[in-house]
Length: 183
Image 1 (tube, rainbow, N blue to C red):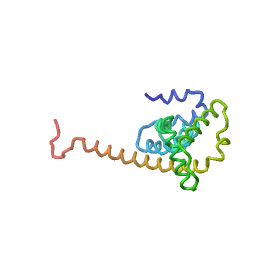
Image 2 (tube, helix red, strand yellow):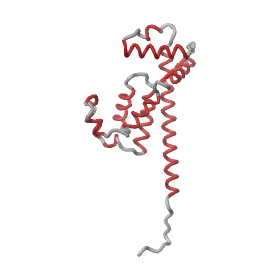
Image 3 (cartoon, helix red, strand yellow):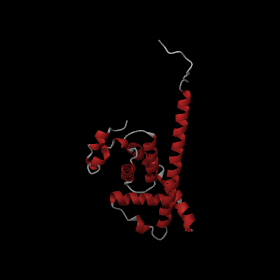
Image 4 (cartoon, rainbow, N blue to C red):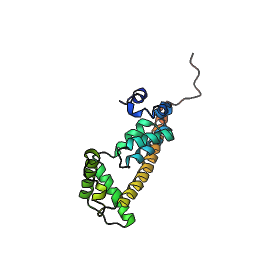
């Protein structure tokens, strides 16, 4: 299902990073590489920029994490989950900074306006909503949610991996040292 490393390296958009992507550790599915990818991918997912995947890729290169896992986890925030995540982030930031909360509908409108601004040259939502929305509350909430969610997911991955490993070891047939050697 995943593209091969060779196919990814042929991409024109990744020409600058191609020499760094040849490291086989970036493509192995082992406990250490995958666990680092969980931290990086989940953390990157909470940054509301079009470059979430690029951020996860750069983090994977720096920390030698599994690239496909980190890139895939950036899709935790997608068009379906963006509104609840952004609302929760604003709520957390507003509570900490003691800023008035805004409605879920206004956050949805801001996301829509931001998309129009980026893709079609609409009005800049940062100037349109500057009096009613606290950008600092939103950013603080996103950072807090990103760090907490990343830590929880990384620790959960470790626990699940360890549990699965123990179960697989327990299912192996037991060796007995009293058996005579086969002839």
